[in-house]
Image (cartoon, rainbow, N blue to C red):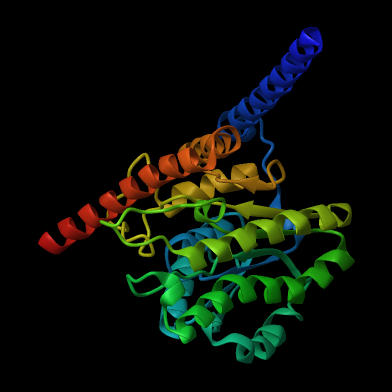
Amino acid sequence: MAFVVLVVGWIVLGLLGLKVLYSFCNFIYCVKLSAALGHSLDLRRYGPWAVVTGATDGLGEAYAWKLASLGMNIVLISRSHSKLQEVAYDIKREHRTIQIRTVAADFTEGESIYPLLKFELVNLPSGVGMLINNVGMDVTTSQFDVLSPEEEIQKIINCNIMAMARLTNLLLPGMRNRQRGIIINVGSIWGTGTWCSTDQFEPCSIIYGATKAFVDKFSHDLAVECRQDGIIVQSVMPTVLATKMHGLQDMSSMFVPKPETFVDANFLTLGIESRTAAYWLHKILLYWREVLHFTLPGSIAQWFSRKIYVGIKVQKLWTEKMNTVK
C-alpha cells in the first residue's frame, strides 16, 4: 500500500513538474522568442476591418493605434462623438493609407444602440476580421457595489457583459462564413477569483469581478467552439494599467505598464494563448495566483489576494494624492 501511495505521489509530482515546465516555456516563447522568430500573425489575412469598443481612452485607444500601425482599417466605437473624432483625426494623420470609421454609442444604454451598430458593421466591405471587445466600467461610487443603485448595476451589466455578447453575436456569423477571424475579449484578473479588501480601503467590486469572470468563461467556451472555424478567441486579463480607469494615467512603472506596452505584449500572444495576462509581470502574477488558489486552503489564498489588492489600492490612493498636490 505504501508503495502504491509513493508511486501515485511521484506521478502527481511529475505531472505538476511538466505543467510548470510547459508554463515556463510558453512564458519565454511569448515574451522573448515569438517576435524574434517572426511568428506574429498577419492580421490583415483575417480581414481588412477591425472593430474596437471603448476606443477613445486607455487600452482601447492603444489597440486602435496598434491596429493602424499594422495597416488595418478601424471602426472606433465609444460614447463621445467629439473624442472619437479627435482620436480618428490623430490616427489618420499618422497612418494616411487606412480607413477609419466612428460610431458614437453608449453601451450602458442597453438594447437601443444595437440597430445602429448592426447597420454600421454588418455590411463593411470584405467584412470584419477582428473584434476587440474592450469597453468596460466599474461602479462610480466607493460603496459596496452590490448595494449600488439598481440603474448603476444595470449599466455595468450592459457595458461589461451585454456589449461583448451582442457584438460577438453580430459579427461572428460573418467570420464563420469566411472561416477566419479574431476576437479579443478584455476581462480582468479581478474576474479570476476572490479579491477581498480590508475595512480601511474601498470594498471589493463584486459585480465588476463577476462580469469579468463572465468574460473569461464566455471567451474560453467560444474559443473551443470556434477553433474548427479558423477563428481565434482570446481572453485578456490585465491587472493594473496606467489608465484613467485605474486612476494611474500619469504614473507608469514596471508593475503598471502603459496601455501601449500592454497591447504590444498582447499581440505577441495572439494565436498562442487563448487566455492571457499578456504583459510579462501580469502573467507571473496570474500564474502564481492560480497556483496559490490551487494548492492552498481558500482562506490562506484569499489572504494573499487581499494583500495584493491592498497594495494596489495603496498605490492608487498615493497617486491620486500626488496628482492633487500637483
